Length: 240
Ligand code: NDP
Image (tube, rainbow, N blue to C red; front, side):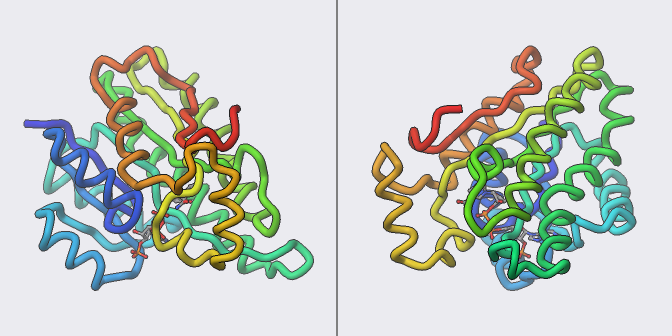
């Protein structure tokens, strides 16, 4: 049996590409999602990958869901912390809700899943955790202090947890995508998007599969010496 991967936010956008790429590569996959039942049901019907709805920012809900997944499918070998949202505004217009929603969905979610699988991974001597950060967590971005804080937090979390897992076969890495053509980026106003694309040396937005390719590299059994790293997948937009 192939290794079991949990992909959070795994039914749409980048997460969907990760889920399907992993399945094609022989992994068993369970995809989490937050609220879009229509997209999730269509995803499961098309791909055969089970989708499970819960709020990834909620520890108790994540605990219950992970226990149910393990009971049905066995131990979780791989977690891809991909679920994320934006609630953009300059700080002087940002509400506490906009701040808290982004921190809990993008960053606290990584604690929730990782905390709930790490003991078993350490005991089994194998685990792969890949956290999806962002170029905007590396460089900051106007109107995204909440998102940049959460994504920057992911990069720090990755390096700290990597040190804790290294001697137990658990690797923890991050991917920092540049701008990728998904619903999240399609919500950016067209004139802003055109300016962004003009700054990407590759001359195009990323594709969700560009990110999935990097995930596959990091989760391989023989990628066991790669930990605490961040892979930038951004068409050359910034060099960090
Ligand atoms: P999408 O908006 O296309 O998809 C987001 C996914 O996350 C959906 O499956 C959504 O579920 C899920 N999700 C959102 N909130 C929750 C929640 N509370 N609980 C569980 N699942 C939730 O996003 P992208 O594919 O564009 O982004 C994926 C990741 O990549 C994010 O972390 C994002 O920050 C990051 N990223 C994206 C970039 C881009 O340019 N697109 C650039 C850099 C980083 P549902 O379908 O139910 O809403």
